Image (tube, rainbow, N blue to C red):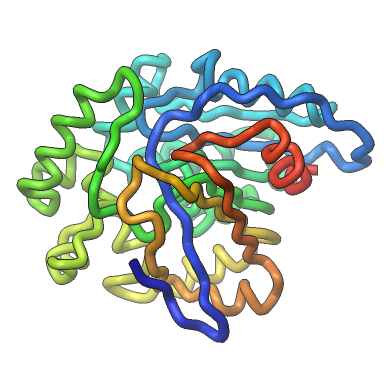
Length: 284
C-alpha cells in the first residue's frame, strides 16, 4: 500500500465488479439538471441489467428531472457488452466510446461521467484522449486508477470466468496473448515486475504516463471541473485497496478539482442515503 507525495498526500481509489441494486429516491430543488450523464459499468455487469445499471439509470432520471442518462453498451447486445468487459481490448473500447460520444448531439455542450469499478479508469482514458465533447465532472466509484495486483473475489455469476482470469493473470499477465485478450490484464500492475508492466501494459501504463509523458493527456484531464474518486473501506474485490498515482494531479488538487470520498462497505455497496447525499450533488 502506498501513496503519492505531492504538496499533500493523495489517495487514489479503485475497484472491480458488478453494481448491486440501489434505490434512489427523487431529490428535488435543483435548478441545473440539464448536463447529460454517461455511465460505464464494471466487470461482469452490463449497461442495462435491471438490477444494477438499468436501475441506476432510471433512478437518477427520476431524481434529477430533465437529465439525459446514457448507459454505455460496449457491443450490439447486452451479452456482448458483458463479455467485452472481460475480453475486448480496452483501447478499442475507449475508441468506440469516444466515437459514440462525439456523434451524440445531446452531448455537444458537455457531459458528466460516472464509472463503476473498471469503468472508472476507462472513462478517465476517455477524458484524456477525447476532449470533444468535453467531460465536465468524472466520478469514479471504486475504480482502479493505478491498477490491481490481485483479484481476491469475483462477482456473482461471473465467478467461473473470474477464476479462469485469475489463473491467467497469475501465470502470465504481461504475455502478448493475455494482454491482447484479457481486459483485466491491461490494468494489472505487478509491483514486483515493474519493468515488465511498463513495457507490456497495453492500457494502464499509457494513460498513467509511465512510459512517456503525453502532455495532451495531462492537459485534457485538467480540463475537468471535478474529478471525484470513491473508495470502499471493506473492499474484498480489489487488491490492494489503495495505490499510488503518477499522473500529476497536483495542479488539479491546487485548483480544488479533486474530491476524495470513502464509504463503509464492500465493493460497490452503498446506501441510498449515502448516494443521495454524496454523489447526486455532483450531477446537478
